[in-house]
Length: 148
Ligand SMILES: Cc1cc2nc3c(=O)[nH]c(=O)nc-3n(C[C@H](O)[C@H](O)[C@H](O)COP(=O)(O)O)c2cc1C
Image 1 (spheres, protein in one colour):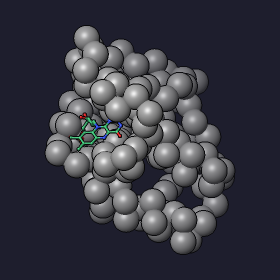
Image 2: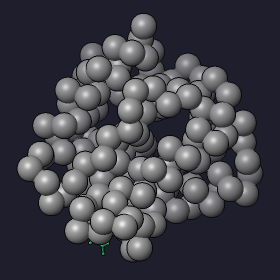
Image 3: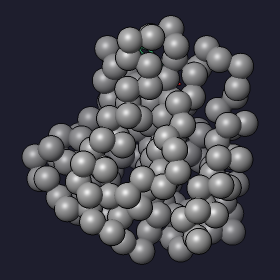
Image 4: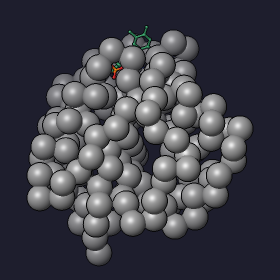
């Protein structure tokens, strides 16, 4: 199974985490791509996608994910047969829009017919857990589910 990490970031946290997850998945030769360089037509049913995405502004997608979201909305591709997981990053200092970025990515992909594997994670930058401490055990579970 090919694994592709897609990250949406404003200040680099999601990129760093995506790189750490890929290093953790060294047996899988996982690729890491900024969503700004990824297009809806690039999705491939042989690949499992792990989306790592933060939240910015007033509950918006971070800058690097916005062009991808706009293309999804304009092109309305069918993502039948695509499987994905989402690690969302946010901050409970923004209670009304907490983790809306990851939520939006889930809605965009699932709304186009892709299948969410496992539960979307909502990391809290003001919480006690380091993103890696949540993400690495989570990703092991997700990969086991996706491989099953
Ligand atoms: C200006 C600004 C706006 C933010 N807005 C939100 C928000 O609306 N909801 C949320 O959950 N987190 C929000 N955050 C928190 C970020 O999503 C969080 O710090 C995340 O780890 C940043 O990851 P990134 O560096 O990959 O963009 C905001 C942070 C900043 C600095």
